[in-house]
Image (tube, rainbow, N blue to C red; front, side):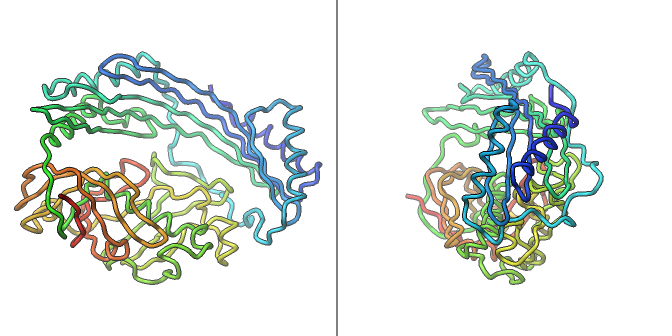
Length: 439
């Protein structure tokens, strides 16, 4: 059972008090409790089961502009007292940094907690096993499915309290349930794998197990008997589950830590058009039951909706307290990174995208290094399908997709099929004139 708020608060207040007594001029204490359980299935047989119950503390001490942090999972009183002394002593011998400080008090979260982030539902191991076996049973109904690479179900419950010497003390519970099924299909010597995955705050919102197994088998079977294609430049469509990876690169390039180093390809681009005018990017922490929703970041700073890109123009960075001071900007509650990050829907219907040219490459899987946020170079291995006159003709494999993110951002066209399945989401995306490397 998760540790309750009052227990965690008592610990946090005690640690904060002792940090001050030991000589810290400012301090923060993060105490977190997490219980995770998972089962793994392979070919409809149990392949493993794990459970972890962790209680951890992260102490941060400031002595003037000097700072030190230390963490531990041993919360025995004698050990913690030594840890507190060590943390303060380490701070005293650390070089001063003028940017070290707690967040400004007016930035702390003071709102109402109404995002519905915690599901009390507890799934017994036997039901976890039944759930994912049902997914595999459905997948094996297809004669082409001969094996699984492993399928699983997990549930995670967590609670935390953050306290600091400015008087902030708060926290909240959250939960996550996830299930996946990865299968192997075979036909006439050709063998391919694919998967389906579902992750939600509430158990009842998970994709049904039969649908997980059905989708996994459908995707794997479609990839059988792939062909190689010649190298050329062409239009490329990125499936929704792949298109979202462009947002990961974008988010890394606009983090205040990266900006402060002056190295990303988007440096000095604030209030500059970096996408075409139809592109809008939002980070929205207040989606009810949202996978990435949160009330405040790891520093206690309130997280509000952030318009990152408006009509193609870069309007905001992800800013934490320390790096924000380095670039003369206030924290916007992103010390923990993005929340629910997404491209807003575009104007194009899915059918219009796949009918936009006589020949289009449709990508539904990528692998490899991806984007270089220093140079903006983009290169990935990929597989997918050749689309001709709006019809999926045959699967393709052993190709690479290459381009420059500056160019890709300007050329991308977004569909109108956005779904909030994960913490980072995108509609289907088309990019014109990418270099496709084949045989």
